Length: 283
Image (cartoon, rainbow, N blue to C red; front, side):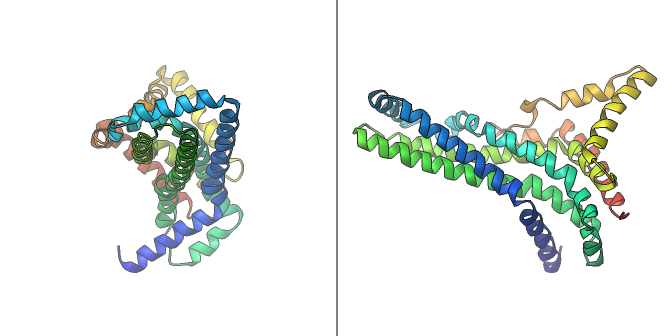
């Protein structure tokens, strides 16, 4: 890919972020604000002597421990952000190509030297690579503010806080694992991404209803005509988070390079190719 193509693709990514900044930036910011306010309120309800003991106990507990070993513990704190990211991904993918057609911006982009393939790929890269970065960055700021706040409280209570540094390092390492988990989730759910983009590309109205309706109709027809539940069993087998969440850097290679992952990427690629083809036909 030459320099012009890279600049072109970067412009597509920038466009996606700017047009959907409420999903990629606003949503995690709102969630972080709510979590911070809730934590401030909860800690204000705790008596000072109990709070001081809790800070000192946590500092002593984490003092000298390996951040790599403790990082999975902090991934629990990222669950609300991961949940919001999944919801945002669903909203974004099912509406992005449909919105292009509804607003007739597809005609503008088709008049430019930008291929349909690049446009669709930019949307996949946006939700799989770019969007998680914003969530991770906001979560990092939340951790940093929380850690500084706890350190100030510890100093004001005159308790030992040396172990808070190890705690913060573990939290930072956990963010890397969360980002890797978000990326492997996108790869694992590539059939879902392709399915949503396909219906977003050609549905004239309510693409989510079309995608969901055809999805469940396929289950019914397979059971009614063939008496089998292969599709339902395959979907169920891919719904286990243990298949794509990364809790250790050693799990990255195994999670990505396996038969189930590669087969899912193949199915998703076929559906994405269908979305690229359907995008050629503007309303």
